[in-house]
Amino acid sequence: MEDDKAALSRKLIDIVSEISAISEYRSTVKKQYTNLARRLKLLTPMFEEIRDSKDPLPEDSIRALASLASALESAKELLRFGSEGSKIFWSVWAWLHFQLF
Image 1 (cartoon, rainbow, N blue to C red):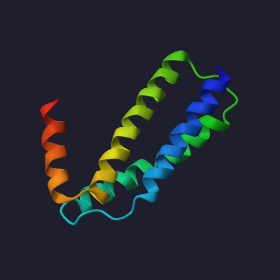
Image 2: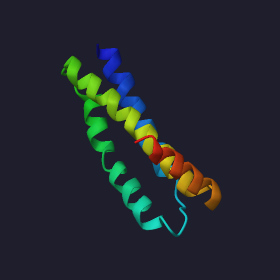
Image 3: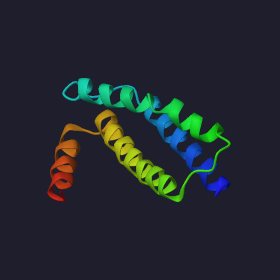
Image 4: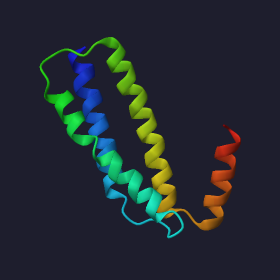
């Protein structure tokens, strides 16, 4: 259980670090994506606190953090598309993505 907590908190910190490394966004989405990246970076101290905590995490908390890691991975991909994707690719990807929901 303690290994799960350490590995999961490390994974969350790494994902946020990768998000922080993405810096340039297309002008059409720059404000929203910069705001999203900034807000996600604010989670780092919480993840570090979880990593450094001596108390065990309940199983529900581990599942919730795993779900959060999945959401952060999706956010990272979205931000990467906003940074690296062409306008045509971005339009097609957004259309396909929103068709799923």
